[in-house]
Amino acid sequence: MHNKRPTHPRETGFTLIEMIVVVLILGLIGAIMIGHGPFHSVTLDLRGTAQQIASAMREARMLAIYSGTTQIFVLDSAHRNYGLQQGIRHALPAEVSIADPSRFAFYPDGSANGSTTTLLESNRYVVLRVNWLTGAISVEGP
Image 1 (cartoon, helix red, strand yellow):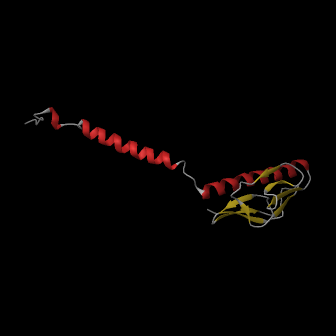
Image 2 (cartoon, rainbow, N blue to C red; image 1 turned 120 degrees about the vertical axis):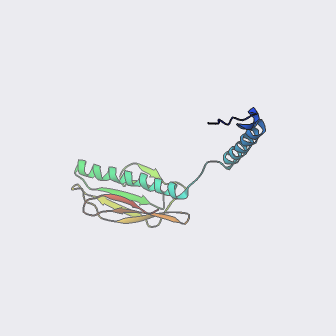
Image 3 (cartoon, rainbow, N blue to C red; image 1 turned 90 degrees about the vertical axis):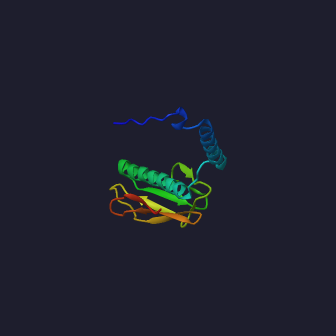
């Protein structure tokens, strides 16, 4: 068998110039990415806000069950906040609006009034839906 070996060491690997070109290209791409700033997704921001509101609604449902009293959860578009009617309110992010102000009633047996509401940001929307029988809260949309 004949073993072919390169006759000159220059025939294998990369040259210094090739390595410098690759490093410069990667540096240029990195500079462009850093200059562009963090990536921003309107859909993810809206969905994150909806998940926070849904979590607060679940807490209101649990409080109704634990305390044995009906709890009213309010999404207030005029004051741009949400929370228990007689409790702590949380501010909505500046970009998010509520299509229709809503009041949700959570009852001691775990059920609810079964309402829905829509959150809007730019041209995207997410629907918060409450099941009347189980009081389960779902976030629907992109």
